[in-house]
Amino acid sequence: MIKINAEQQLDFLIDYLISERAESIEIPDDYQQKRNLLRALMNIRAPARLSQEFLDIQDEFLTKETLSKKLTSVEDISEVRGKIRLWQGDIVTLKVDGIVNAANSKLLGCFIPMHNCIDNIIHSSAGLQLRNECSEIMKIQNGDEDVGKAKITGAYNLPSKYVIHTVGPAILQGMKPSKEDCDALASCYESCLEIASENGLKSLAFCCISTGVFNFPQDIASKIAVETVEDYLNSHESSLEDVIFDVFSDSDYMAYRKLLFGGV
Image (cartoon, rainbow, N blue to C red):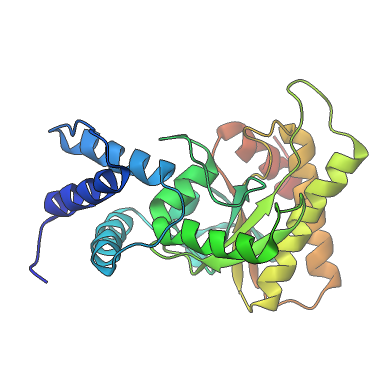
């Protein structure tokens, strides 16, 4: 294969995905706008076979992007209590064995172009193979993923080795979660820990499950997360040596910091 630069790779990937759709889409000249178009096209693409040439170019393109970011390993995270670590940052830059994706019941990723949910971000960074692998899992399952359960896949072009997908409970805006909702959220954490242990993972990073578009109140969710993980680690034999709570917002960080280390 002739070596091509990043912009040529980007042009190829966009042309491929547009040609699949058999429609006219205006391609911008600006690199970042073209990059956004590629992500949007990836977001809306249904699971389907991809040519090896596309996969080779996509993987080189996405891997270069990943390696250009500041990646964080377990040892770089200094806020530690026992096996639990707290870190604020972008989960797709964590160089760990597994990261947790807050998925929806179809388990195929977010189809809204450029949406800022964790599901969209993880799928966009991993590459289209992730949606295809999730699709194969769901075909075998022959039904939606239950709330509180988890599935494991490869991570492809992410710096982690695996992605564990779990479906959290959704709460109506402004409503208080029921006991059943709280139990379901705890089950998400337990299921992820179990499947990580079954697969021999040593490090696992959790996002804040259900607290985004699923509206689970942050203060209740963080308490459930910490208690469930601590209970599991204290009562189970597990391959896990490090469990990371990865938070993005300052308010999430403060909630977890107070629970784990006390103070304000």
